[in-house]
Length: 563
Image (cartoon, rainbow, N blue to C red):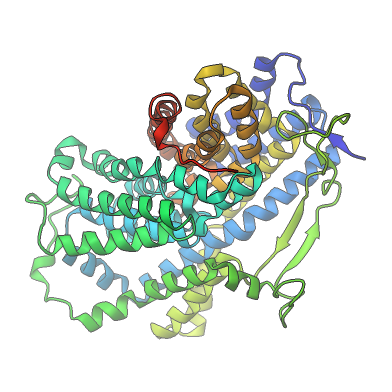
């Protein structure tokens, strides 16, 4: 039986919004109080189910199906990425070659500020552009802790760095999705995002160094910060405005990595900065590493980069998924199996003002799909796992050791995987019940001040769903409808959903858990969240201020075009 979402069950938008936010308040509140992530996630999920059924009137079987659908999505692709990335890291540590990786990074610069820029920002940006979905946080954080960063700062820096690149992550998927949902040309949205995010690409490296070492640390490292952020911001602007959204982060990440590494051959911080608890490093007393030894140690990470990029290509994914309906290949029906979620698929209808409703109807023309795609071969985690297999051959790790390490890794992250499943179950329950729309509609009541709140709506969407792509799919249409009603430029307002959303990426529960697992801090999610939340909110507010200025003062920054 079909069910139409209701966005104000209480007849009072403030009270409806308050109740709709209870699952998130429960989850984040328990994390901040120090309750373990699995228990907090389970409590949040239980609250989401109660709110969906008893307040929004969602049929119980549909709510339960939404939770199951979300849990499955949490394990594949997201949980699989985390497991494979952590497994690859532990393989390289077991082989002993990660010590060479550490020495080679220190040879570029032993300064922790510079190392954070190279790994968390430059390399992490490339990984975001190639794969997205938690890949850069998992891998960057693991590498940082491997080269000697404290676990807490490894997690925090990986989360902070994974912000401004997110709108163009996974080969531009968020912007492409936003264009499809809103009906605005993806090139116009790419150009608008490319006229907002480069400002923050300049700021994020500085922000990272400030978080690590304070303003004195920034002062001692500003040339490297400028080269790192400036090179990425320049490429981000140029590619997004003149080429499109697909290769922005890939080219920007590689470009900033090369530019910063070359610059460091001619400049180094005058005063070496390490964490206060670290002892003075002794790298200079070691014999220099040969190029061959460095290349051998880095090969697993080179293989990883190649596999992640390959698995991110739409044509490669299509091939691994069995081809198209018109041109299937030998993998058709084997590598990708789709399941319609019982009691949920095409049962839930959205309604105004989130979607345009046909005249004389109370619902959208089409019900919401709920199809789980078991694309086990084209999943990014599979590419990372195959990189681990190839790396094992390269590092001469035998099958027994390989399997034993995989088992140990699986046991180590078991609760993290369960937590991710619960958190995605919560997100999907919230989505299909319409509670997320209820929260979003509260922002639309701000009138002429709405350009400030439009990015915060995207920020909220990513914090809820864990994905800029999902937030764009959720609120893209609402943003365009609201912009049209208020007489604002839809290109600016719709694009700001994605650019504001990137600042929510560092606080979504999924990313927090991934960072904690990658840095072996399971149980410290609340501490990480408490630290990172003010930074996320401050950056989201800054995006809001920029959008407000572009709406009323700097309107010439908005690309002109038909859509």
